[in-house]
Length: 401
Image (cartoon, rainbow, N blue to C red; front, side, top):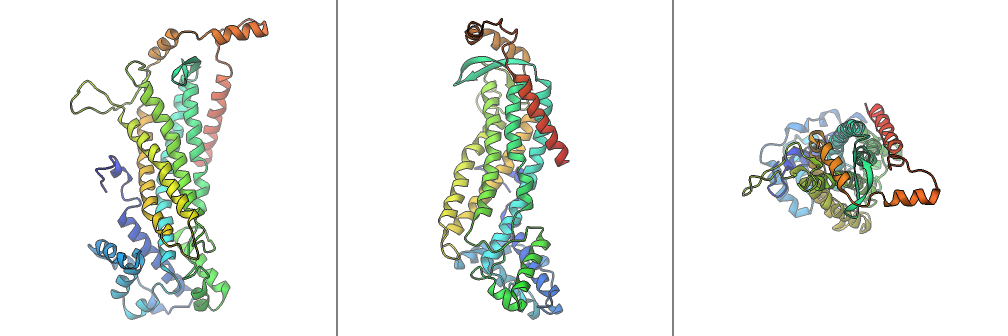
């Protein structure tokens, strides 16, 4: 995919694209049909390979026909039935409802994207761990509210970035393993599946089989309980928050008047050839600025859930989650590129620290208050703090490898 409105969108590849979503919906229909046959509910002759049924141009046709019923599943099922033999067409989609197929396909697409995000996060942890260790004792100026504050180290600043990335990366494994299947039927009661299977246990077994085939977690129907979607959105926002912090620090430090950091590969200007713009930082900050509002839309939709299928709130999730997901994947790749190519000017950091006025005022106050001679370096517990973050990062790398 390409998107002129979102430079870098191609980095997300086919993840959460229209094509991926259509394939995921077909995969759900395939898994359910297979489950019906394996359970002895549908006859063996109903078995079919649905993956080759669709042809070029079908995506556009399904998209146009979905305007009739308000979702793409009805159009897809109609197309699959038209191109299947009588036995397959009779059993295709039986016991499911449109929301089952659409929700499960969304989860499948989101899972694939979360795997990419997790891989990028793990790489960022490794890179930042090395950077924090390398610059553990490199002196630099701490700034608060944009102004010179006290001495610190570049290792401490990078450790703060690393803590944020770890806060985002650590929960992803648990989230990915708990993404739920959806198979509630027309009103979320498993009524049709119970009739097909002949018992409640049989209906639940069909739902579980669908989950197993798609490598999702078994789950009871959650048609209007949307925490599965909001948890995905929140995880992505937490990632973008962490990456936005890194990007903001790098963009600030790359200003010529500061000059302590710069991107390994900056961008140019159409009219000012002398510029070396921090483009990766800019594009990461763009994602961080927009991620929160997109997740807020998911929460607003969740809060507007009503009855056994929501009228509009559910529909608002699909494109919102797609946009948030693709933006997050792109930001993940950009952040990996940023930290991997980051250039640090230790001499400039030291010079800025030396030139900052009034840095010893708090140190003098502490000496007067305690009556003890001041320590040579007024850096407090910085080394201990950096060490704690490095230990946490190494545990993460060990556990995720």
